[in-house]
Image (cartoon, rainbow, N blue to C red; front, top):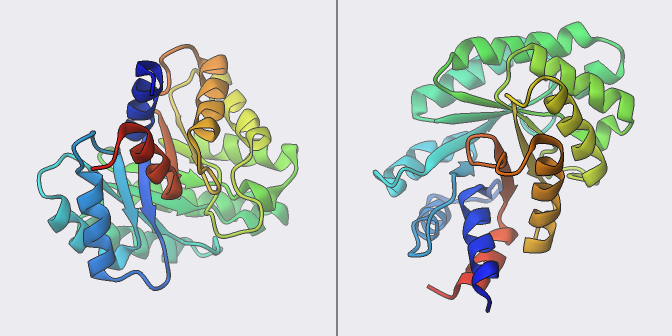
Length: 246
């Protein structure tokens, strides 16, 4: 195992949102996930769980510095800004550090950008400046470059902290083609918004492709935990295998 491979695996670990969004997740499973997140090789940027597991995750992570992320308007991307506001408020009250919100992508596809934007504005208002907001575009469902660009621009106009590709709950999730469009928009706006790839990223080779794409557009070293994340669970296993078993 080369030092270069180990260094890269450590870097990817620091960029990871270690995710468990299973319908049958239990508190015991979330505690196991959080224990893995505090391994001897370093920690991910965040653990991402359903809202009902926020308290369990916070307790399990203690003062580790690993953030707790959760999802709202998930996974369907409903058209109701009031729902988004309620879910976001409850998640933050429960202790979430970061919110991953699904855009009302069906509204956007139907030509109703105002409804899609209203949901993002509602979430941004509740998050304020302290809580990171990652906007899930569901690019596999938007499908066309024009809609992916429009969704990206909508998110940046609304002041989100990250654009995120996917929920991981549809047939087409993260793709390099969609990421290219999203990162192009981020670069056009000065690179202040972050980027998160999620859904189907399982290997260090997959991770490298997204990091290289991002840094090709935004500069070497741009992909830091403050600006670049990968949402995955299987990728964590590949990282641990590279770094050595606990």
